[in-house]
Length: 229
Image (cartoon, rainbow, N blue to C red; front, top):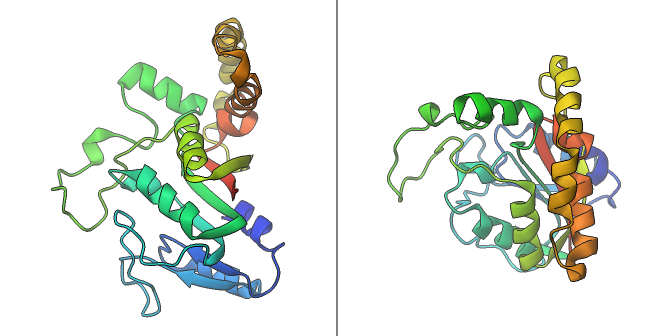
């Protein structure tokens, strides 16, 4: 949230920002303190001024009606997160920004957890209740999302990745082991990176840079900055 707030505070005072899901509202409060017009949306009923928007359904909001949208740690709770990404891009003005964060399944701690347990970081199946499809409530973390998936969904909806924002690192004590594993995987990564067609060379280079950046290797969450075309 601190990383995203630092970016949004550069906008003109009064810029309209959608915060979904708003949770307890602390981020919306910080946006208002920064002079921005924050619109909070959530089904949790924490506050009377929340818009009761269901993230798993089409959003009853006008096209290009927000200067920016923030969705932190929400997509992974949905059965069909791609549909929400498309909706969020739709309601942002051309040239406007989207800030999306999801648990980082790319970090080395998550990779080691999967190697030894068959489960991904923050996606332990034992914590997820069995709920019917029409359930309205928190399903917990049901959908792991990779960076290539998120980039692809956004691109198809009309938005491009600008960068990853920093987030606190997960299990920093393992950095020596993580560095060793990163070096061991270098030849394999290079082989994969060269397997694409020449038409995709520039795209693949950016993918490679992001997936192998320190932000992706160590961060607890992937905090992605997108911009609508």
